[in-house]
Length: 259
Ligand SMILES: O=P(O)(O)OC[C@H]1O[C@H](O[C@H]2O[C@H](CO)[C@@H](O)[C@H](O)[C@H]2O)[C@H](O)[C@@H](O)[C@@H]1O
Image (cartoon, rainbow, N blue to C red):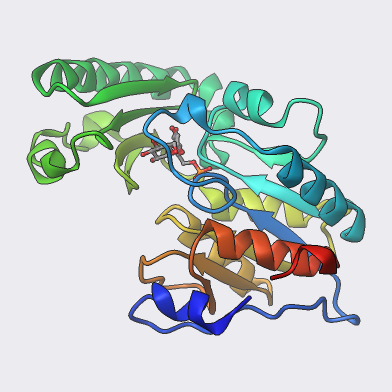
């Protein structure tokens, strides 16, 4: 990776670029975010897909890591199944909250929030609602100027919505299960083979990835923040999805692909 790629959009914290080689004595367990990290953002989430080159790269990384590669995403299991297809890589969806789908009180509260978001979306053309099994999202990527206006009209979280928390993501307001996040998902993975005993490295661009960075740090690993958002928990930085791709190529030992 070139230093100019790092400098172009470095966040105010001026984090360093991540190491470019595996420390031989300390094998890594690698946790990757999807949107904004592996894949660039698109207006329509259904347009996001892995290229054949990315699929091959992920396979090589998985081999080098002896399977200790996991995608931590906010996407639904169905979406992840579409994106990965026959690519057999460990992945956790909905920010680690899938288990909440069995909690009837949680589902009732989520249904109330979904109804409120659908009303809001009708009132503000250009926004749309994505319902996932354990969360509900108001998207405003096509009308980013409405962010503040929408935020002021979102359902308030009080005792009657105590099973939910609000995540202000990239052009989204998401209501998800309280008590589970990418940090708890990372910790759970790290307790199982082939992740156990390795150094946790989490890579992501969004506010939801901060939980994974913090969990990785607490376990003796580190986080890599992607893009221009200033990170609280990450120790390292990559400029954008292209820089992530080059870094992963380095890690996979794919020297032909380096620029
Ligand atoms: O944790 P991630 O894998 O980054 O998933 C987070 C959310 O990703 C999707 O929304 C984001 O990507 C969309 C497509 O590029 C973009 O249009 C949207 O503005 C982004 O927020 C997905 O739709 C959400 O359900 C995920 O929570």
